Image 1: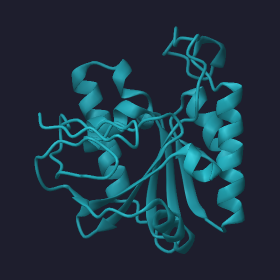
Image 2: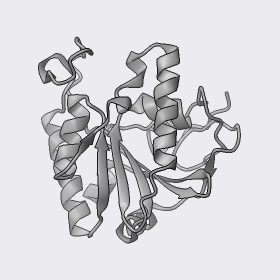
Image 3: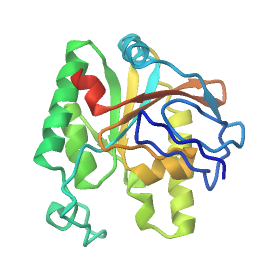
Amino acid sequence: MAALESTNMDIRLFSARLLPVCVLLCLCSISANAAHVIEEEKSVPELMQGLEQGGYLVYMRHAATDHTQKDTNRENLAECSTQRNLSAEGREDARQIFATVKQRGIQFSVVYSSPYCRARDTAKLMADQVIIDENLQFSISKDSAEAKKLGKYLYQKMLFNDPGDSNVLIVGHTSNLRDGLGIWPKPEGVMVIFSIRGDHLVYHGIISPDDWAR
């Protein structure tokens, strides 16, 4: 696996287990193996301006969590007491991001979320209406075959969810984007920005929680 380490953002991009990706050189490390994701790098100001105009797919990793907590029951995802949940910092980050998004007039026509509480709570701080999608649940907790299935589902969901003049927001986990597109988003609360071009996804870059604060 060929990987390039960025000094600006803590993002790792690994070879996807299902879908090849082209080399991306935008604040990340990436594997070089071909054709389902196109690189078209944009700066953070360009990304924010683009979101104001619409037409983007945003994959957001849930906001910062309390790492003293563990997922001890992955069968009942409605029970937050047995999961790793948002920290006070994470909730404040999500509120600040939403306030800035609203101030800039950025709109999401639809917001999807993993059923895990940390993703749901992030999404609900970002939007009034959230669609919970069971197929967005944490793929790293699954066996290899199921993880690949969830990664493929995410890729197809993004490819066939044209945002039109607005934007689409998906709130999920690190491993699903890795399994579907070969991208491992860090830190918590980061947004990875894509658009659709024909039958390909186009990767444009990332917006970190600190970028919104600035």
